[in-house]
Length: 78
Image 1 (cartoon, rainbow, N blue to C red):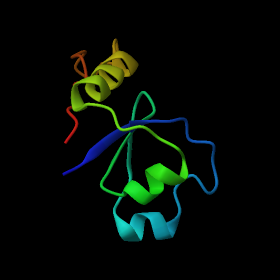
Image 2 (image 1 turned 90 degrees about the vertical axis):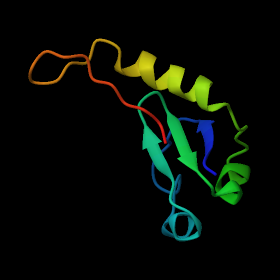
Image 3 (image 1 turned 135 degrees about the horizontal axis):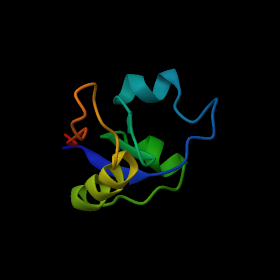
Image 4 (image 1 turned 120 degrees about the horizontal axis):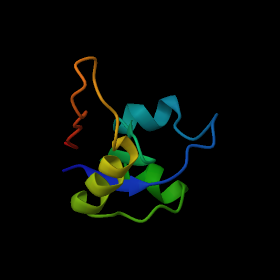
């Protein structure tokens, strides 16, 4: 079951090859991260958030973003 976190990516070392080997870490707009890798989250002292709160951060981050047809972009978290 995926877990949801909010953190700013500080660059090199934020997500390592080893982290993704344990469980893929996916990034989304609004500094939302989705993973089952609790060791990665613990290393960064991240606190799990609800999917609803994570989705709200993503929605806020992409608000006003439109596709080539002028339609609002929608991104639903897994």
